[in-house]
Image (cartoon, rainbow, N blue to C red; front, side):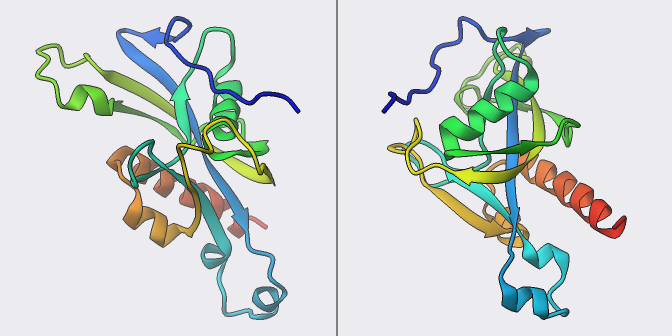
Length: 179
């Protein structure tokens, strides 16, 4: 059995004009319950579930995300964060849902005069989950929870992640309508 660990430190962290670059994803699955498939009144959105994780030492829910390092692509970073924080693997969509600028939680409490201090630029992707691991690097610090989209919007801690979830829903609904 191999030792599972998360990357730590920021010595390989990417920056763009003082903004820390982060990459993350919205892990999702479609419910395949036979009862739901036979019930034509259950729409696509209600079959869609997203996976959120608790923040370390808190009960707030977030999507897996973290620093994009200089030895990996933005897609590799998103996949790594999903595995480290949520213990999931899957098919990552190559086109980002969007890019959002936000301040890191550690910088919000500071009174920095430089508005870019603590600034992050987050790239978010959709990840169709194909495997849920029983053991993963941050299992001891995080709980994972499958939610429908409405629940996730209500429970999501950060406004920028809510916007990412809304973008995710638009993409998924557009694909479903195109079938």
